[in-house]
Image 1: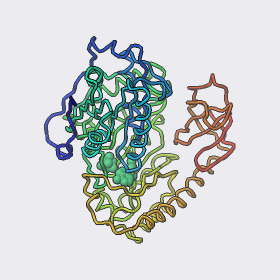
Image 2 (image 1 turned 135 degrees about the vertical axis):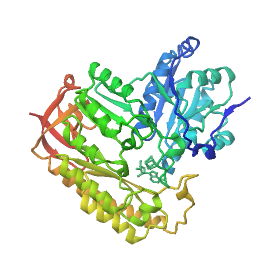
Image 3 (image 1 turned 30 degrees about the vertical axis):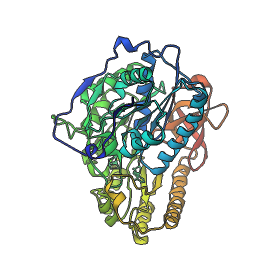
Image 4 (image 1 turned 90 degrees about the vertical axis):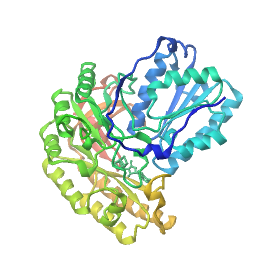
Length: 473
Ligand code: 5AD
Ligand code: SF4
């Protein structure tokens, strides 16, 4: 018998004033040996939030006795932590499910499952229930902490377990974490999003905005510092709205100050919505040397008409005012952005407004996308008369301008000496380590492996569009 709690799209968008519950994660002893002798493999798609969720899932699986393995082909448990933001993210996952089916035909005992944002989509789960019934588990973004329980049921029942809550969501503290890096760490400061930009699926897959208690966040950062971490990135879908849902008078500017006061070397944060970006925040970023001068400030469109259709709550003018305020106050600030082309009904004139903003802001880099209709969002129902060919042409023209300014921004670094945290061995160059500047530029540095985790001064010797090369001074 299939056991099911399936997502419901009408429920997913409900927002009430109900108080957010804080739950403490604890694993029951009876689950601690379930995974003994078994290996797991997780593939992660999408944003940093998913990357960090995977770090939690791995730690829970370790508690259950599973061992991590690098190769999917050797795993007894395969999980896909999925992303729903655009159609191509979906397609990649369904392609991978096809591959897993072949493996399961050869090794029927494999447990295979889907989690993350796609698991929160009613349409996706319906498709799984009709075409992919051979999968073993589907669990959502709201119940990662219930993984031991869900897995236990799947192991015992031998049939598909679907456990997905379409709810506003709780806050779960004390979830264990197995971090990918020993030097830099993701720290959730809030979950969910209440902005409901008309193209975006996130408010439906991640629930309502829930800010963590500042004390819990600061305690986590202090502990990370004690453990030797050099950098934290404060994570949320819309971090600038942090605190608005708390009972206390405490906002993102206050949180940034408190985290900076822990004296951890580097503080970063993603992602910012321009609408909630206050002057106090800009001043706080400018004030503390350990808050990095790097800001991801999604524009989405430069046309006021399109911004209104997108429900973004700012205009080209107010965006530019904020942009220039940051640039004038935060020394050496690097600003990047996200842009969507081909939003329903976007005219050539609208698109040119976007190009105008890019010409004015000369972003350090930008992530650019063609609009992808997401089921259940208002924009997916808007009339769209722009052809795919036209959208692709706009994306191409936009990328030409974005790349030109990305290269120009990097060229300014030639012969400069900049601070770099050495994080990994370079994937591109033998004998090199890779790390990031305070402004989030990727640098390949000739350095021995035992320097991993060090903060070093690097002279930039060579410049490409997306990375820099350098030598330790
Ligand atoms: N189509 C295209 N791009 C999208 N994004 C979010 N939703 C969509 C969509 N439906 C982009 C936005 C956002 C980034 C994470 O993904 O630019 O900032
Ligand atoms: Fe999506 Fe807008 Fe929320 Fe960002 S702020 S997650 S684009 S709804």
